Image 1 (cartoon, rainbow, N blue to C red):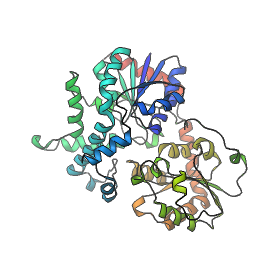
Image 2 (cartoon, rainbow, N blue to C red):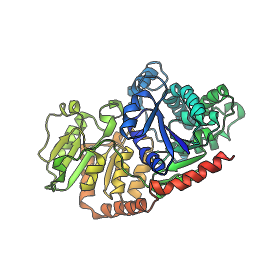
Image 3 (cartoon, rainbow, N blue to C red):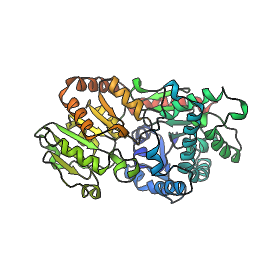
Length: 429
């Protein structure tokens, strides 16, 4: 069959689709990947076929323009807000006002990330006639184009799928409101596109007709649609093994990586440069080899680098994580799932991930790691948590339990048959 993957143009979001795309390809299916033009080189660099759709404006340019026009909160407003937890389950926090606000954020981001791609994507689907569209969970252009072309479609969440949990809570409270008060920003936005192409709104535009998940089963949220689970397999793009990594570390190796938030979106970074410097100074006496990934311009802002710390601009996560005794990260799925895959305890310090709180709680409940909300984090907190991870063997045991759970899941290749079955079932509806 012909399979079209759809993602808005963001490197790490696309890379989390690659192993399933290649599994379908090696099973004999014809696979193509549609995204904004800025992602073309990343897609072709993975060996897959790219379909550029939408405008040349980059994601960061779109976000900056939306903030300037008042359609999204500014970086300063984001920092003043309470943490945005899409997976919030505390009853006192599940108010209609709060869930309507969060739904507005989803719709606002959805417009910015998807609107420029929809028309091109509909045209392409009607021309190429795929048998299945697989869309990354924020890339609603995929569900819209698939529906407009009469094609089965599947949603691929990247982490705990906080959006699905928030949507379920939102719809439950919406049903309790007076008809005049039942606003639904996500439905309103998607309906505009549905009406343009002559079909009615359906909740499947939000949920997909089925989902394809690569999180441990114990961390999945309840689904309203069938789902295919498969094992996370690390893919970080082109990778070269640096020579130094083959040497036995002189002390327990700790990786600290903060991904995109330290360079491309500093307003969402987990730690400021000042906090990072204080943390390095406070951890300078620990018996460890700390490998810190930092862009050169951020590194140059540091006044001191302790003897137990090595700063590198980049190292492939899949190459370094197996050699580590602990991983510190900002909540990105590659670092989070990479540590789980190798049974490595982790410390998550996250502002950028909307599901950081439930993932952090799940880590702690499994005794596989610890979580610090950035708003409550000090250098002393980071040192204390890191020492716990390095000295308490129960964290390694907990991480290895989750590792065994992940390794028991079907590989991407083994999950293909179920994807084929569900695509055929949905296509016959």
